[in-house]
Length: 133
Image (cartoon, rainbow, N blue to C red):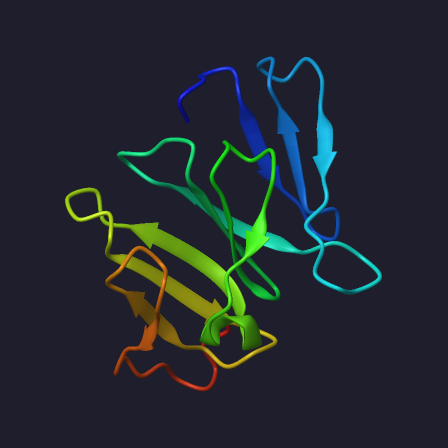
């Protein structure tokens, strides 16, 4: 992130915790997903050229923040029906993003070639016993 004092932590059921002072104080950032509790955030990825742009994989798909994690919005895409366990942004082509899904939803590997605006399932096959990608 642009500010080296900013730290983000994804949680299970408490959304994202954010510290702007190197971890001395923390603030809970709610990610409203229309449910009674906040998101289970399983992973995060920071855009290599735009350090304030952050992606968070959750049990309801992918969220983005354009202000270093202060505010979040759910991307409307096919990943909303999946639990996202992993996100990777290509350092050399930041428009290329990969997302891996898994338990309790099917294990699927998605790719975006436009910075997360649209996503396609890849042809990667995973065994039924594979809990997550």
